[in-house]
Picture 1 (cartoon, rainbow, N blue to C red):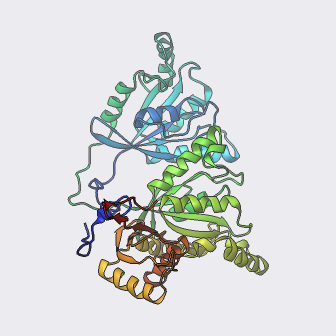
Picture 2: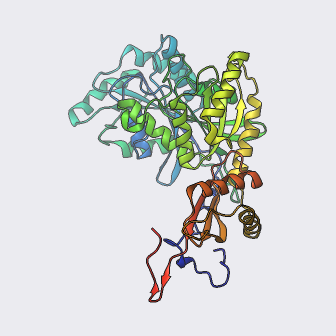
Length: 479
């Protein structure tokens, strides 16, 4: 803990303060173990793939709803069983003659099969093998990957008997389970581990993993297109209809010489408490993806007016304490007239985030996308910047002598000592002789940015007034 000046006790301040918070987000991260095996879960629509994924990972994370087509991308999740780690990939429903968006969803499922070590093929035991299931088997055989046949929705012993007919698919013995209730899931996990390739040797040392970047924004601003552009492949389903992405989609991508973990998220249309059904759960997943990220890239549509939804997304990122990059997408469609009005909108609507790193890009054409990685690095560097205590106090003394706090009640409160309590984001605590006006507190934050930078990072400044003391000892604290 940083030492206070002689005669100054941290307990003399309102509520005390814990200076242990704010360690670097990777300070207690586990050792990087290298690549883990991948298990892809595939099948036709509405056979219970996402429910099975939630059962395997042990938490309700994949969006589930009793209608086909909720999952649209291939979405990876971390899983473990009996001490063995692996990645399970949820996919959208596969259909052989799909068109338009359904064709893109099926293509993602096929890519998941090609990149997996083991494939779980899910069939609805209450329906039996269909023509679509038989067509899927042909696709799976072409992949030459190990396939585990799962007869899902076997909620009782009578339904388990129905699975006998699935031997006709030629994939061996069906594993009867109920993903919803958990019947047979333990035996299935044991068989998955048996089918996985050997565990790779662990790497020595504590190697930092890829930096985590969340792509957020309202629907149809181009988040999935940007992910596909930086990944250099069709990683996420793209459609002109807003709301194509439902689950957060993780991708490891190489950009400007580094590996980054990008997360494409669902577009935020409403506040979480106003959403319902799939949109409600998608909003929760998006909020979780932002919390799990280190930096958020907020995409805005350059051709449209900055909306209340855009403002709400930016607020969510700020409140989560993540580093912030604002990317104005679809810049290839912006003419001189639009640029004139956009500059005015930025001055008016983004005045509170003038510190955010801004880039103008086009995910469709690739224009200036190479500027994204340097922008993210700048934001992360500010997010993790630490100011030495001596330099901070020396600077604050000069600042407050030149511009003291306004006099209140015949006296002007002073800063006795200041310290940076943490990083990611930078948090500063000012120990003072009395409460500060909110305006003066904002003044200090603004001057902090002017002096030390913090481009692309929120900054928290907390004031801790010294408690009043009276003749009988310590009196009532400032409220």
